[in-house]
Length: 166
Image (cartoon, rainbow, N blue to C red; front, side, top):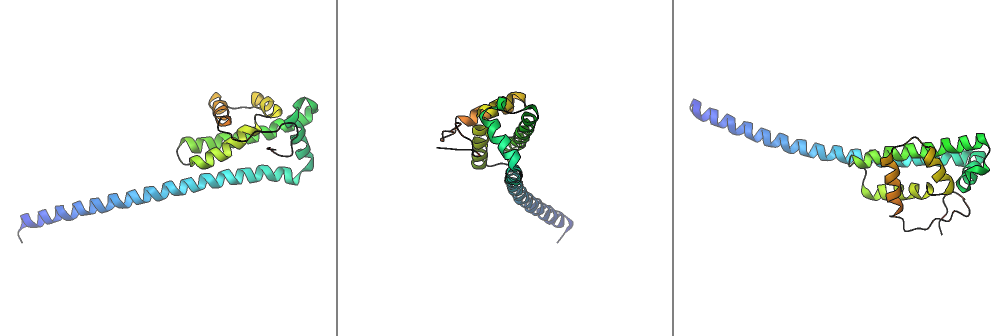
């Protein structure tokens, strides 16, 4: 084998190495995207679990939340502040999940399931009041309005025992 043949063989091996590397990178990118999607869903569930635990572990906060959903004007100033803080926490969690969805790492199925539920809650009399007070963007408010149109459930705001559907 002469030097020209060795050079051609080297180029061939180099080309094969590039193709193998590109295939490996494509597989790693796919795995990384899958991991990011799983992490987004985990964050969604963890945030909701923490939110729900507050009510499970604190009957007073649960009472404030239920009364605030019906009519925040029925709450005293301290209760209204607590209600607004809890609602802001839910809006903050929604903004985080929306960013995951906007980056394409949160699947549409989870986005709609979570988003419609959150939008329905925030459509309560207290939720609407709190949204006007909340530190958020117009983009988030628009997303909440859009998600309400995806709802197939009608929300009963005459009583609140958590989020009540009929």
